[in-house]
Image 1 (cartoon, rainbow, N blue to C red):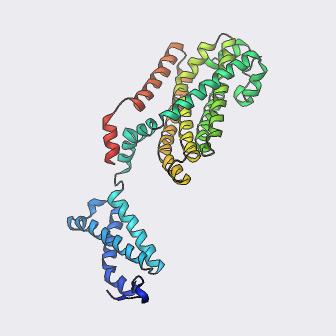
Image 2: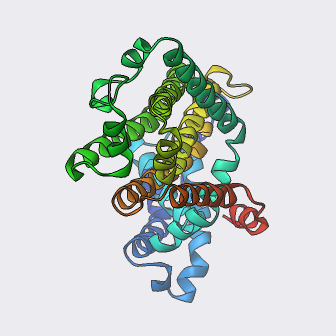
Image 3: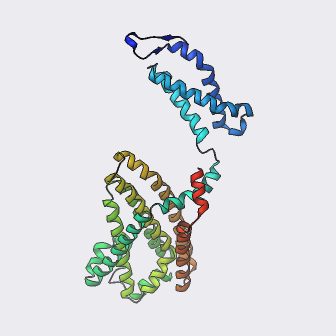
Length: 344
C-alpha cells in the first residue's frame, strides 16, 4: 500500500485508489457471501466460505477504521459502513426463520417484556380501579354524571332512563342480534382505541396515558352502576368478564408500556433523554405487540360469547380462566425463558 506522509507529522494520508485496489477483492467476496445468505440462507455457503466470513468481516471493519481516520472519500466510507452493517447482522443478528422468531416471541420475549413492566402495570391497574370507583360514586351521587362520562355511541339508549327489560336484553341477547352486535362492537373498538392511545401518547411524560386509564375506569364504573341500579349488576359484570378480563388486562398493559416510555423521557437518569426513550421503547414495543394479540383474542371471545353463552356462571368461569391463564403465562417463574433471552 502506498502511503503519503503529511507534513509536520500529521496523520498519514492513504492513497484512496491504491487502498481500494489492495482490499477490493476481499470486500467483493464478503459482499457476495452476505448477499447469498440474504437471498437464501447460511446453508448455501460452503464450509470454506463459512470459515472465511468472520475473517473477511474483521478485515472490512479494519478497512473502515482506516478509511475514517484518514479521511478517504465519502463514497468509500459509506460503502464500507453498509457492508459491515449487513455482515454484522448476518453474523450476530437473528438468522432464524419467521416461524422460529414468532415462537421465541411467544415463548420468552413477550412474557419477559411484560415482567419488566410490573411496576408500571401495578400503577396502571390502580389508576383503572380508582377511576372505576370514582365513576360509580359520581353517578350514584348524581345520575347526570352518567351522560358526561358515557358517550352517546356507547350508551345507545342504555342510560338511567332505560327500563330493566331494555338493559336485560343487552346482556342476555334477547334483542335483535344486529343491535347487540353494534353495542358490543362499539365497546371493543372503544377499548382498542384506548389501549393504542394509552401506549402511543405515553411519550408526553405519561400524562395522557394516566388520563386515559382514569377515563376508562370512569366509564367502567358508570356502566356497572347503571346495570346494578336495575338489579342486573351481577349479570353485566359476567357479560363483560368473558372477554373483559383479557381486554381490560390488555389496556392496562398498553398503559404500562406507554408509562415506561414517558417516565424514561421525564427521568432519563444517566442516559441522554433520547437514548433513554429508545432503550425503554424496545421492551415496551414488544409488550405492545403482545397487547395486539390479546385484543384479537378478546374480540374472538366477545364474538363467540355474545352469541352462544348465556349462563352467568359459565361467563364468570371463562373470564376467570382467561385472567388466570394470562397471569400464569406472564408471571409464573420460567427459568428456561431467562436462558433463552440471554442466549439471544
